[in-house]
Length: 549
Image (tube, rainbow, N blue to C red):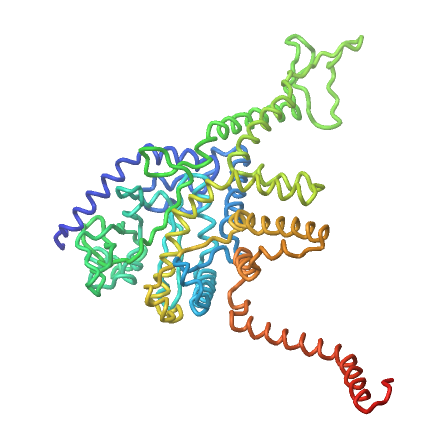
């Protein structure tokens, strides 16, 4: 048996400390999962190994309001942040001077198109995994994505990492820069990924003895490299070091590196002194538990109402009464018609239902469901009212959306750009951009982001409307001269996410205007031609001494 690797031993000790500090969180998350995501209720106690397939996990679930609200929360986050039917972000030069170069603008336009092409490719699996990240945010307050390149062909591959198998810590600026993923892999998977040479004796023995599905625990460590030197051209010159370790044997399966952190992590809310996030489910867990208890009571009451408990006299002539339809129970009444069989009172179902509705409202509020129910409940609103309600939604969602853009989506886009660039899937940079070392920034074009930026365009529209009113009153068009239409229209196109390739460049615009000017001159000359001809004819007649006609 191979001796434990000292580096692997140190990494496992660091991981064990992180894992030991998370007991309360895992207990909290397991309690949440039992009530809103029952399929994951046992993952937090499986220590990285997947529990028994198909086992029953809904024993704590009596009301599905929270589970449905979590699904809707994921859909809301997806529609507001990453709608798959739209380009929800784009790359632009961070230097304003570079924006003036059309070739630079076209390069960023094409780069944005390619990112969306590979992100939403069928084998990338982004849409489904991204939805799980959002649901994890709603349930546990933390969502993690692992972004890597495809093995068999160029492209990207996404995988949501469940919180039960990922542990991380922050640097001094509060940025997550260290991650440990502790998970089970089948022996044959380890052999496929790392090869026979480094798989270890136990793994090779399992594969050789037809036990290829036997599970071994693997630890993936990603952390900043202590001896980082950008001048080194191998993986040792990358800012992040990567180790795959066979945990039980403390042996290194693989050593590598990353130029960008491969585990983008979003946190819904973060409390002081805590590394992991807190989600809506944690805030309303008391309401979720209360609703479950109320639902159990409601079911009991309903059962007793439909199939009541009978109260019988202890000295009556009746035996056990028959509850079959159409049955005759002799002795159920006295000779004078007095009923001897009564039902046990069950309480008021309507009160229980009102109490349940109150808890459901609290839960739906926390998961943003009621915020998006406004337009459905009031379909007769005017366009102005719809815009005002949408603006209110934007105000309420801005903190949540902003955090995900900075913590989750921003690092994800950086990782995607890095992977596509290394695979040669992005077009060559124009000289001016290459000289600027490819500097860029991300502008988000999600529905909420566009609504926030559209205020500028709306301000111009209101200004133009007031200027036109002044022109109509004074018949003086000079108020419109204040607006630089060339700049304004390009900025409006930018706000509305119009692709650069759809717009004419400055030279094309100049040519179009020159052509229009020539056409106007020709038209003016044509209109003036009859008058010029008459003048010329009159002049010639005067020269000959004849009267002009």
